[in-house]
Image 1 (cartoon, rainbow, N blue to C red):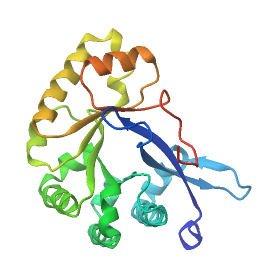
Image 2 (image 1 turned 120 degrees about the vertical axis):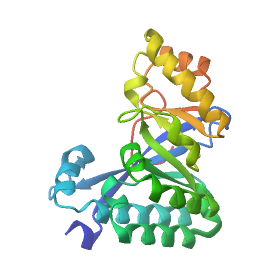
Image 3 (image 1 turned 60 degrees about the horizontal axis):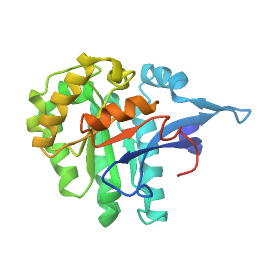
Image 4 (image 1 turned 180 degrees about the vertical axis):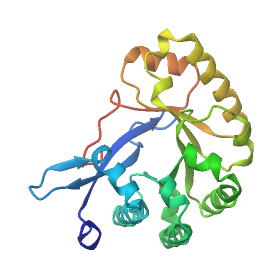
Length: 234
């Protein structure tokens, strides 16, 4: 099986904070698997089946394990993000595994970003509050991914110990032409910065979008304008 042989492929997509040197990029880790012919299958094709079969916690554990191994090999040279699925948040054993992996990183925990889906966070706030605090206390950065896709209230952000909010690409596409989305992001930036949370815009593809996002004071970007997912770190 995939899990027994650990036959997964990690792809990496860069994201960049404007305040940092360009050679100090973060990378989000994206999961791929290979079929019998060696063809790489994107997550969008196998994740729904993995969810139906309740196998996502196993995928998440395997990715987290490999990301931590990579951080140790490279001594944290490239900070890496790992995404945690809603299914894993609902799995009682996963939190223990996550904390174990982070503790084993020691000082290298500062090169790991753990990203959580907004839907999972807002439906498990009571559980997420202590978990995020524990991760931050160990030096690990934390993020909410695809922010705004399911929920647009800012209220719950005050109770969370977060490093980053990654704004869903639906707000970013052609943002230079959308006053409504510009208002949303401007409001979010003001609140997030008051809580010492940095804002990263996802799915940035054009220079027009980039210019507008800089005007709105976002802290960084991710998307094809910066780099597509690939097997090597850039």
